[in-house]
Image (cartoon, rainbow, N blue to C red; front, side, top):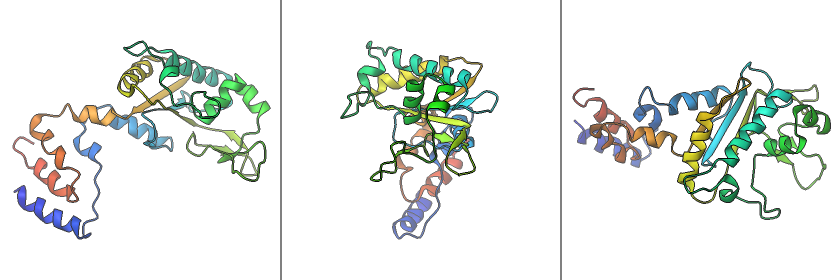
Length: 247
């Protein structure tokens, strides 16, 4: 009952006749796992995991309001940044020692909006000193570049009548890029995020291991099938799992 659908769907996938796609996370992650609600939270704010960072957070205001120009919210975003970048890994390293650095400035590469918040220091200063535009921000008006892209960092954006100037944003996506000791950093990042408490902002975090670690908790009788889940005929594997005794 397993080999026949495996062979059939494998042939279908090989010849391009099968176009069914199923999310491995929703098949294998336990119903009470944390990865699924975290991913759903990201989707509700208009974001989906970018896959280009080992660690990411989505910040929203507890009251559902703006996260870009409010002083109380920006202060909490900056506090979260301080908590994450000063946390020590098990070997005593901090984000500053592990981060990806800009080739010109040698500074840690940060999300553009976060960098602007750090420079401004408050939401009011950010709003008054910088005319932020969406999806590209190009204060120098250079013609050879579109400017800084905010499309992957801001969600639920409200624009002015000119369809460019930002009035508010409902969500903030921040990526923390590291280039060494990734596993230690992920553990530190998750510990810092899960321990962060605020009555102003909600923090949803995602790491490169969020789904993998929860899949690893599955019983051995199911885990053996994960190795072949990347075959073109995924459906056959899932049929085999679904018909296992006791399912």
